[in-house]
Length: 434
Image (cartoon, rainbow, N blue to C red):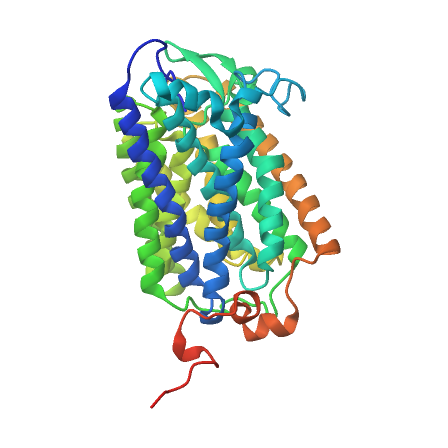
């Protein structure tokens, strides 16, 4: 979030409405993700897959209001609850959004709108991880992981990246990655994409491979559902990226057009890659290309020109497609390619700023300093998220169990975990009534 948050003592009703609209768009992304993931899995796992996204919406939404916002946005980064500067310093007036509610009673509510906007980011980030463990995870265990992960990974990392004070377009205080290190991340390439992708890899390793894991073991059961999900995600992503300016201005407009440019570039190159490598382009491939482009442009959307956004999209359309193939070489089962798209795409987009970012890019004549900062920030978030996620996943697996039994996995987890199936005709309890 790289605009000055708001001007003290002035009314910002237009800015408040802008944030409310963008927040609604970003919140809509989580049901969109549920459709996207739900269409990609087997028909007997649709409910389970979608419930992990919807469950995240409920749980993380509650946590954000109670204490997540307070952890992420106490002070201006220094002395945060468990940020890099120590454990002291949480602003208890921010618990249950108390200070923002009090301010809204006499002002324009911009602080409360900002808190809601940030909450939608937390929700979608947690939900993203679930794609790596499709077809084989217990819902209750997933919810325990989601709550712990948000508390130990997302909330502090959001503080490192998003919690800062800016003046005249420059960060003058804040979270250590943006202030002390100088990482540029406009809308969450690190805290959203790299953190979720690294955590997805950790969980995929902890839970192990699905029964009979091979290339092409399961085709998406409902392609139209996947495409509906992608359409919703792309729509919401405009609010995700442009809204991160916190104001409807020229920077938001640049973020908006780049959120169009990168995905279309990635769609084209992914389709070309599939034509060359497999003989035909697929709708799932083109949809995946759009998501890869959206992931990559997230950190860079306000820092590069639209032509470079097209280039970035063209690059990730191929790189992410190749990365997905690597899971079969390396032998880990990332069910819905969260690692190949979100981790790899997030890394490429974050580093791309150091190469082609306005005023900082190596290939634009500004040296390699910013590239080094981007690499350091990406590495810190990746290692931190992976380590915590692996530890949490291992602990849950060893105690209450994370993975369903092989019998339940083969039969399909929907009936076992939720007592229902997505399609009545496949439900053994469903019979004709005369």
